[in-house]
Length: 423
Ligand SMILES: Cc1ncc(COP(=O)(O)O)c(C=O)c1O
Image (cartoon, rainbow, N blue to C red; front, side, top):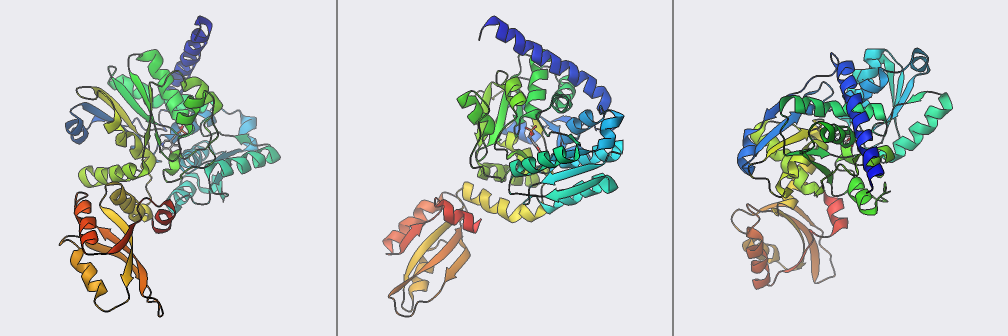
């Protein structure tokens, strides 16, 4: 990087930081100044000082109201009359809807069809008579395409969820509140979807607390920043896993990439199963309810090199977890932790074969799934069997007993097609 480039980057960060300070004033009274609290459990676990910025405690249960309100409160009267349109995987929609209601602006919201019902209902509740929800396509990117087209057709104002300076500045107010309370953080961990939160927060830290290391975190199935950093420009991912729906974006914002590409010290990816274990752990140990995107940064803590004794800020960016997803989250967590296993067992078609199989199971192994249809003119028939083990370490002994007893089995956990069918 030459000096002129470096100068430009610093200028860009400075401009964002200035906008963040103006945004802080604009949003006060509408957006909550959430707690940035010391977390005993995580601090003990990692032998570090870990602080959680609780954006799950916003009225809309994510930081997204910050950017949406900052942007929309600056529209001219004429723009307000034309109305606003947005696309969202869910949380931007809630921020947008509440901003529509507070500012009395009419808005249309495009969301991907698989958006959890809980999020759709809340959007309608926040926006009341001011908003209309339209469900289209499978992913955020599909919703974005349709929203953008419709916005041009009706000459409304598009409120981008991330690729907009005023939205970025609004999200950056998370950082100004963090620094206000603790200016000596060693690391800050930030979840990344399109990159708006990362851009605002990292630019502000670069100007106000340059020694703080910026750790960007994504789910393994939707690594848009990770890939973009690898290729040096905003990358287009062909396939993504939408499990962590708040951060499942195929293509990060170009403006966001420009702002954060030199700000990120480390870009981490977290397996979806690990995100699930973290969601359950936070709920069971601390009664904190987070959605997958809200858990991803906490889930990444164990990947941090050199964590001991450090002072770390983690943004818990969203708590909109749909209760209907609990079964899926539990299943993925058990698979990740090595406690759940699926097998195809080829049973000889004779009396007593099932009993022999049952005798190979340990006293605490639990059959959670069994699918078998007797085939009349064959000597053996396959059964699909799911087993939950008391601890991951029981697996080796189990398959050892299968082998010793001559059980004909195939372990299916690493078969992605079957995994998708079952989970
Ligand atoms: C809970 C949550 N976390 C993180 C993000 C990612 O934000 P950004 O798109 O600004 O990267 C989102 C985006 O909607 C979100 O809802």
